Length: 146
Image (cartoon, rainbow, N blue to C red; front, side):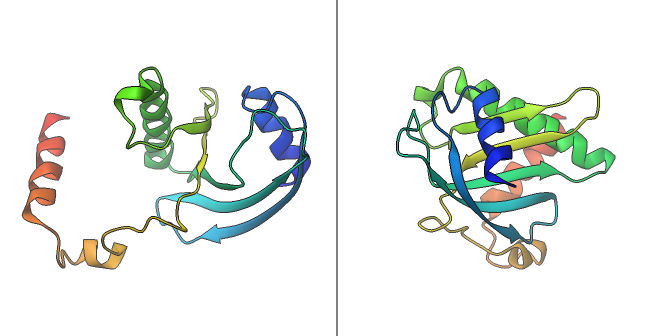
């Protein structure tokens, strides 16, 4: 992701109204279900509105389930944004795009990984280590509703 590409993405989404990105440092995340990159971003001093310097870029994997999950995730963030004050626990998106013709999705969110950590690792989830029974019950409830 180049500064020019990110500036264009932010501007087209209406997130950046003035100014531009001058530097982007990217670190890949080993997520298994999507392509995730952590971005450290520097903006020109006149950039408005103020945007986070730590961002997460999330794009779907090129599979049928990856495209469907990406579509749903973008729809989820867009839906919650309509009534954001009711959902303060959800990170508001900076950019949420879904391309109907390709099925590709893109989410750009504030990166809170420096201060927030998952309660358990992916490996613990797979092995059901220390997973509260409530989590399993909630997952089953969602599974049977679809």
